[in-house]
Image: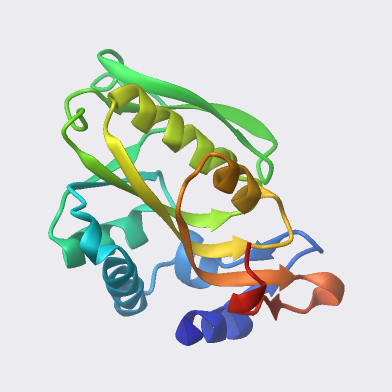
Length: 195
């Protein structure tokens, strides 16, 4: 998605050889019109799969997931990182390690919102080591719903997340794949180079 690549180049900030900050449009501040185009792109890529629900992880996945849900006409469920007074029982839960935050979180969804009849699309903001995606796959497996794929806004192709998902047999669609962040520069992976 060329417009996403341009957004990454103009508004992203390379912090190291493995970290890019995209909070100007994805992780902190959200550009609603741009997120709508992200949602439309995901909807077109997964349109033929009869998706009934979208699953994402709070908080950065919510904007692209909601816009995808709007485009597909289906509800969005987001896994919570913390339990609350209203979300503390009757849950599916999984452990997720965040390399960026250097911490583990238990993510949870209510058993009321996804069941075995659902056809699930996972939407994730960034795919790096695949831990968030694997945690959401674990949640879907607990529900016995059918997982049809994972849509990723930005993939770090130089990390092993896609390989982990590929080995699990999961179909992944990334809108922009970064091949390298070396020397403070973003280099994108050509589509034909993808795994």
